[in-house]
Length: 157
Image 1 (cartoon, rainbow, N blue to C red):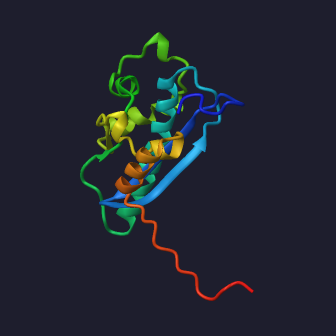
Image 2: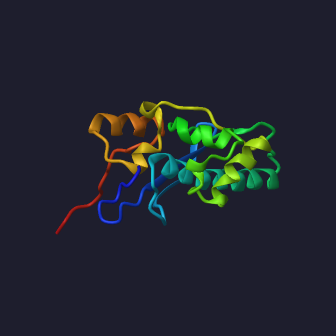
Image 3: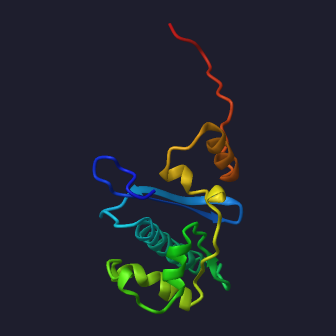
């Protein structure tokens, strides 16, 4: 979420990683720098998610499960997707750090793909934004998180 912290105006990065239907890794963290736009904020978040994808793919290869197709990195910001997929460097993207351009390299090497997902289906929103109760329940269900019934044995004395 762009400028999500009311004190520092720093954005919050959030992502969820799945192996098949299983949620195996997630992150929610305030970004270390203030972003000048929602596109920059989203691009920074995509960069950290890309690093995690590269690490997970390396781990899977190491244990005998190499990945032969690009891993989708779903993004809801079309401007950030355009920056990553367009090799032309523009004046208005100069402020985005060079290290964020690892996304472009991962795309070129077919490590990731960047399909667009609508904001309504962006699962990482549960980690970065205040959401309504119905939206929270929708996202919890999509993440396949369970709230098992609580059973307390014994009693209080």
